[in-house]
Structures are given as structure tokens and as C-alpha cells.
Length: 514
Image 1 (cartoon, helix red, strand yellow):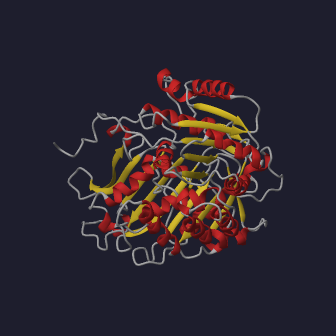
Image 2: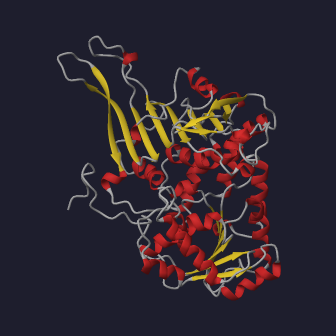
Image 3: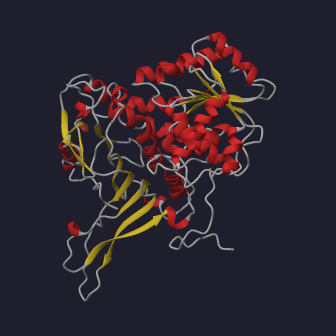
């Protein structure tokens, strides 16, 4: 039987969620602190519904919601049921399906329980032990200021002790600190209570199939790896562009900004996938050590190689957008950046001299997350009448979202008697090769956490090294408005971002490309 599938023809096989295994995860209780929060309703419960639909949860799996709001299990269950039905009518929701499978949802609903509790009350937290007879995973779907204190309270309550073969794990969302010093302090705080193997620092970008496919593309296909180094690669661009603004999240975004929100976590994870050395295996510690070695090789970013911008009024997708400073919860003289662009270098043999350009922003003219690997041009033009400078560059574009797949740009002869070259694209799209099921990107991460596989989660040294790389820029920017540029909503970003590449003789891949 052939291993290969015709990827140009319609889908013919189910795409498993998650791809890492087909056996149910071990039985445990998933304890969700922040049961009434947006994260729980929009992402965690839909992801668990998808896992149940694929038979990847044990019959003895249970979900215990914890929050300060009054009410019992029935009220929480009814509210989640209504929210799941709402998703069938909202095409813009992270989870959208034509209908909810009544049998699958009933399986989840039968396992939902709820306890009202104050996270900071030791006795109320200690009382949860009666609901946790075996293994447990504690998911901290709460504001980041509660991460450290809540872990300490769980420790004092004795809920993190592992005995009689049962495991206890804690999942911590981002933001993990706001700079190097606070990230190191948070790591010290939680590591005083937990072993590293019990901690699952989650980054939902790593749950995306297209992000994990970077490893499959690089290390599962020998044709790419020999090209993956400075003899052949001119530069790499990593983009996470959004068309939406901060909307009603101004109070959160004001002290955070684009750099803290996106770069040391999401963009650095994409950077790690595309730039780390081949690990000897896909075991958790081997992969995370390869990431750590890469991050440690990143030259501290020169603030002169960083650009920050803030969107003013403009038009996105034909609709008027107010300036960031006019958003609810935002100071009228705010210096918070809604756009950040950086150039960084990796001081190792593979990438010496190859610049990596990272950019992220809100209210831009295109929505896309992608990695563009641009290769060097041929040293000599052998085609009659063709200048080397005019040859289109070869590019490999790893499409993360909304397009999912891979695009290769190369030169081909234009039909006709003359030897005239033109740029062409070769594309692979996930939806053409696989039958994609609705998912929110948390399915694989939740499954791996329940199964005890930390490969896609960050280790303490990964966190510290990523913050260390961007810390010089954070310190330089501070609370000053110096160097803050403004860009129109609906544009490609501030002019300084274009100048960052132009001074190297390069240009950003357009947001409306591929």
C-alpha cells in the first residue's frame, strides 16, 4: 500500500484530534479555576467536546468547575449548553459547527460538576480534596495575577501531592510574567511548590496543526533540511497580523502592548519551530532542550532594531475603525504599542549572519500568521538577457492561519520562444488533503496534558531565555513616547517597519500575498 496520498484531490481520510494518539487519556479530574470565564466557555469546553467526540477521554474523566459566583452544577451545565448552541449560529466563533451532537454533549454534561469557592481561601480550596479521589489536572483559567498565589494555596492545601500512583498537574496560561524579572520571580514561586514535570505552561499557538506541521515538514522530508542554513537562506520573516483592534480589551492591553502580548511567547514559539536544531527524538525534554539552545543563542535585540507603532483611525475591511487612544479603557495619551517589529540574529553555525524579522500588530490591512523563508538568489544568471537581480526569489511560506498549508514560490519559464522567467506558486492546503474537523486549537494541548506529554509546553528555562532576548527593547521603550510611530488602521503598519528591512535591502512579504 502506498504511503503517499494525492494531495491535489479532495479529502478522503478523517483527520484525528489530536494527531498525537488515538487512545483515551488516563482517567482524571480536570479542575478549572475560572469556570465562568470567557476562556472556559469559548475554548476549553468546546475542546473537551471535540476530544469526547473522538473517543479520547476516559469514561471516568470528570470536570470540576471552580469560581466565586454562586450557583450549582445544574446552572453551570445549563449555561454551557446554551453557549455551545450559540456557537452553531456564530460563524466568527473559534468553535463553529453546524450542530451539536446531542450524544457527545450529554457525555460531557454528565461529567460536569461545580463548586463555589474563593481561590484565596485556604479552607475552601482544601475542601476540594473531597472531589478529587484520584489524579487531577488544575487549569488556571484566571487572570495572571492569581497564578503564583493560587499555586501556593493549592500546595498549602495538600492538593498537589502525588501518591498511590496518582498524578497532579497544573496548567498555566499566558502571560507568564511581564518581563524577565517578573517571569523569573513567577518561576521561582511555582517551582517552590511544584516539580517542573508537574507544570504545563501553555501557548495555544502550539496547538495549531500548521505549527506542529513545521516539525513534520522540516524533519520528515529530507529535501528541505539541507537547504535550512545560512548557505542558502537569505532571511526569515515571521508575521502575526490581525485586522481586529483591541475592541473592549483596552484595560488589559494598556499595561501589556503588542511586544509583551505576542513576541516572547507566540512569535518565539514559531521562531523555535523553524530555527531550532533537529532534536534526537520528539520526547518532551529533547525538544524543549533544542528550543532552549536556540533561545540562548539569540543575540540580545538592539533597540535600534525594534520598531513600535500605534494605530490611529482608519478603515479595515471597508468599516471605519476608531484610533486606539479612543478605545474604552485606554488613556488618551497612551504610549502602548499595538504594533511591534524586530530584527534578531542567532549566533550559531547554522544561522550565523541570517536575520530573522518578526512583526505583529492589530488593526492591520490583512489577517495572517505565516513564516516566510526567503532563499538566496542564484550567483550567476545563465539565461540570455536575464539579469540575476530580476530573477524572482525562491520562498517557502509556511501558512499558519487563515490559510493552512505550505506555499513555494519559484521561477519557471514563461511559454513562448524566448527564455523568459516568471514567478509561480506551488501550494499545499490542509483542506485539500484532509477532512478537517471543527477545532479551537486546544484539543491537542489538553490531550497531551492529560496524557502527561509536555512536548508542546514551555519549560522554565525556555520562558526565561525568550524574555531575556526582548528585555533590552522593553527597557528602552519604558513609559516614554520616544520612537512611537502612528499608522492608519487598515494599513500594513508604521513606516519604520518598512525602513527596518529597507536598510538591509529587503522588504516585507505583503499582507495580501500568497
